[in-house]
Length: 274
Length: 274
Image (cartoon, helix red, strand yellow):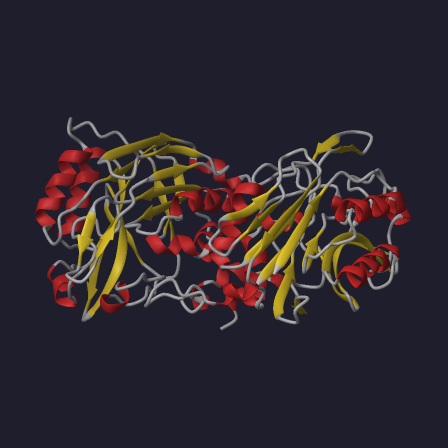
């Protein structure tokens, strides 16, 4: 299966311009042949909102807003499945969400569980749990896809819940500002024996009082926690890797150990205590 | 607080000789001034038992066996608290255990939850959960100490349960053979904001059919997931670091985020599902 990440710098609140730019960056020759494409968190809107009103001006419904429609166009034209972040509006509530859009259209939405810093001023905490979807590549082979967003990486429970839910691949749209994610995602892949795809942005944004610098370093990891492909800290880049997602399902380490069969949920109860 | 790891190569089944050797290695000048000393898993017996009968010959009661008595002598003489691995016998059952021994004597026992490879032929899976003890340094300052053993590192739930139980420091006696622990333990420290102390052995052992090579690289990590001190892959070494254990308790990342307050146990339920 061919997979692609896009790392770039969106322009704050310029949604249509950003979508046009991504279209040109992703597929300059009109021959995008990836099976799965992951774009950053809030990739078409920018991240560091100066006000909730600003966030509202670019918010949309996850199923059929402007961003999802464009993603569907790209998916339909290319045959790829897309995972990408957007500002989701549901009634009066905003969520920092990511949608899964296949050539057939919108498949599902994940709402970010662990909100970072000033996101808490604009977004509601996610209420979707950690869903996993069955997707097919362009040859019709099925695999299981889970999504987490940015700061979710810090909490090992996020990737664990997705892997236990059957995810072969974890798509990880991000706007990372903290330095530790690039060394942590290989461990998330290793400990869960899954593929991970972190699509991060670059550049900086200010909310008027302070600025955030995004760290790039988008990375695709294999089930052994090895980096298959990655980008630098500042470049605009496409990152490609080819792998077999169902390789994630054999978690045997040796004749006696299986990484999931060896788990001991009976002694993990502190993790779900209120 | 001053902390020390010992990395060395024990001789298979030569318990008294190994204890004598550790005594000489730990404190050649008779001036051991550490507050906390961590020794490897099964440090006085060797690891790769050729039979359960071999394991039985070196098994002992955790509270007052030969190993715990020697640890108590060392603790009493030096004022340090020790964490060290031994073959625990309880009735007919064997456990791969680690004891916590203070200058006052035995304080507690942890029985390894996640058994690796042929350990499953000799030991029962641990039934102590992940206990955390309150210990004092030689100045009388209290801190909280948790223990996990070797392969427990692979399961993020182990260190998480200890940190949620209040551990400031995770002592991690090990006989590592897999290559990924040295890059993973800094992430265990980071994600839980705790200090970690991995005391590993070096050398190789055969059980008659195959041999295991132990990877050394004993490491002390701080709460930011940075390596404070470490040893090489083959050397006999003492590894020292000084840190303030209660630094682990402030998990604020910024004005809006706290690493534990931000946890969402309501969506982590897959982790404790049977």
